[in-house]
Image (cartoon, rainbow, N blue to C red):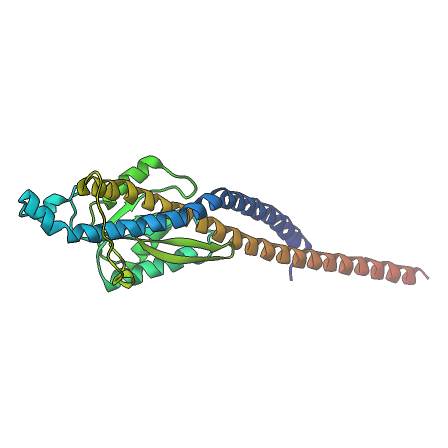
Length: 288
């Protein structure tokens, strides 16, 4: 049977836990509100930029033969400003800590499912994703980047972009914010090649000014980096929303347990009071 002392300790613990959970929930809500407007505002813009990036690459391919004839180049790779390795990279944006609910694991599961279908190199941001990957004991080439959950480290971003940009195709798996209570895994191709379900659309024709080479250089470096940074912010927004929902559920659970502990404690108090009254009444009877 649970004692009064044990219930007192549990009540004190649950009261402290509730305060901590509410504090963390408020922090998560503040961070989510801070980046929500900027992320949602730039999402559509960068999606359009990514679409143009894909169209330009398609148009670029249609111009290769003409450029080769004009410049008398036999090796098409020399028309690219960035040396590609011809490989596919699967990048998982994970987290370093918990309290995000199930969304981190769901994103990892989508990541692994796609990786097994079409193997490639692997890059992971966040210790949780690395732990999941090691637990699965999958032998794919892996590059791990230590990246903070709640701020943008420009030096680390620069190193990551330098690593990513050498790949022919870069698929990024992360969490997308749909609304405050709904976040879902998503995959984005940031290398400028359309995903399989995006193929078959009309090819755009472009006039390049000042030149095709200059436009491609800009797309392949600056816009690539911008799209990658956007995915980082998208992931942060979704994770803060998921953490807020998870902490809210934990807070409600702590409140329920606290009420139960207080009721049990009060029940013991009443039992003790009744016992004392019974003992007092019995002693009175003995004196008569």
